[in-house]
Length: 503
Image 1 (cartoon, one colour):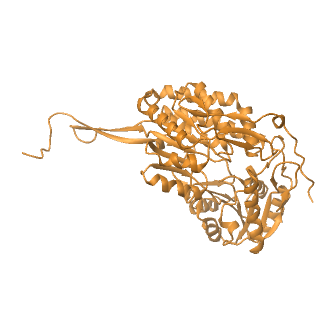
Image 2: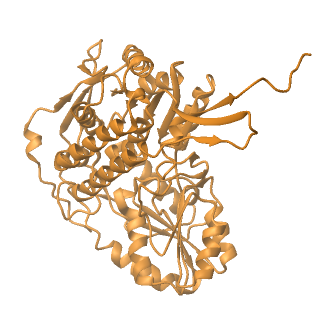
Image 3: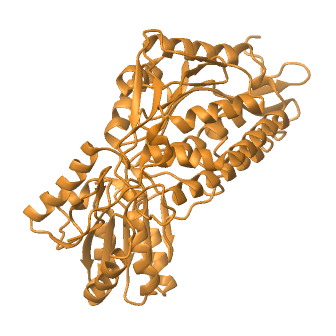
């Protein structure tokens, strides 16, 4: 029996919650009806933040501000170098405030502080990359249409973008969207999760300090039904960029279809790591633990399915179990913590329910499997479930918790069948010393990213997104700014008209 976790109360526990106002048209404002949302730290249990709670009136004001900034403001009309300078200044300010932002994300989400620091550092890199793309965005010209015709293709900013982000990577995910929209010359209305809004509001202040004109970015805290839904359906919004669950993604797409908005979505995943006998098994075991338990498994990219060759299954899983037992679970503000708190008590119950259902269906808990007692907060023991079959919910649905499901295979064809036998297609991993094996799996898995002899590494230069029900479109990569543009064709005729229609 594990000893109860002893969670130390931070200084913030004795202070009043930090308060955040909405950002609309460059001004910090309260909600018109005075409502607010209070967020308690899932790792400690005290109220850490309070946000003004937006509703339909605030959505209307924010969209109108973004629309005005796009139609008459300077941002879409600036030189690309001027927009890039603002993005670079924002990156520098994020870096300067890294510790503060990381602490906010750790307190609100329950993620380990060391991990949060890495995420904020990654966000800085993305903002700088987006700034570089602002200056490389270009169109095309065609002088091969005959002597009398010149064709020019322009890329213009699409307009007002509604950006909706989840709770699991608060600053990192907004940084995969917003800087590219801004680089293109768009304006935006942003809704972070109502559970982790603080760092996005800090980002809003950073953007104003960096020189972003009023109204270009507007930030609203609130519920999906009150804020997210009208942001998606508003007729002045030209594009929606959403990251979240596949279930909510489908609702978002349906709402956007009424006005045929452009929609970009990064949704759920049920990602498999396939391990062959000739792999570096020590490295693969560490990656299996990392993939399954990083961010407490609350990650769309989590390697939640471990697909292992039968010839090595027992020995390999023994090594994985031993490593899992060394993973430090506990206080998110402890630098040594690898797995922090679950985002909410309700979500913890949902994740635990998948483990219970798997046992009922014939699976067996090989390691972990229970809630961890603690003096504060909500924590789950990293869990490995064996004897999983492809038809079990735990093998097909996104659990979104520190739960690793194990399936086995004998042939590469079976491994690919298991990997592809889900509604999702976000990412996958393959471990083998054979380049032929790795290439066969990489080509055969239907997912947007395949890691070969590594797992869950990311770079701004590489596009990210999924097949099937894991989303629409791609984020990051050299075409990320283009996603927030429309193409316009202009044809120039020289000389007298040719090809007369009449006469």
